[in-house]
Image (cartoon, rainbow, N blue to C red; front, side):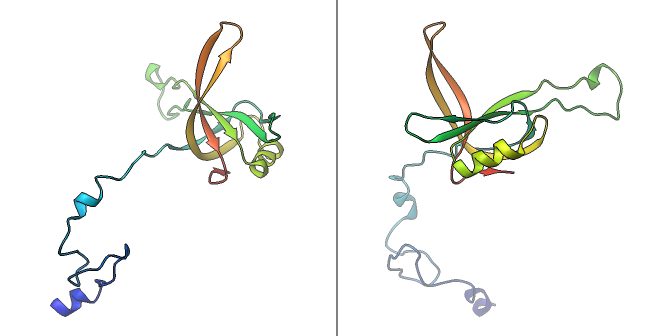
Length: 152
């Protein structure tokens, strides 16, 4: 039984540190101490499945890049098997999508129409801008689809 359990364990280290025993643990150090200095920022990623609200519009920035902006609505679902006051649809939540990838942006303009089902995966970011009407700084959360994002 002991030899069968040692068959799956590896004696090599992925970090390049020298290991004292064959079970994958350093004998002279504590692994918890190595994680104290690590900088974890968190996961700011969103996966949105819903229907297109505003038709995608491409905008040209001052630096020459293009950004495609549209909205996706989630929610508004209700159970059709029941009737009554509790069967009212939930209010829709609208998500602003900004596509910074030029190829995905042209795909969105060509293929996405209003009320089309869409799957969006991207980073959650906040964008700040000056409102000219109220002279206030407004902060808008949006889903940014860059080169690592998905748009189906």
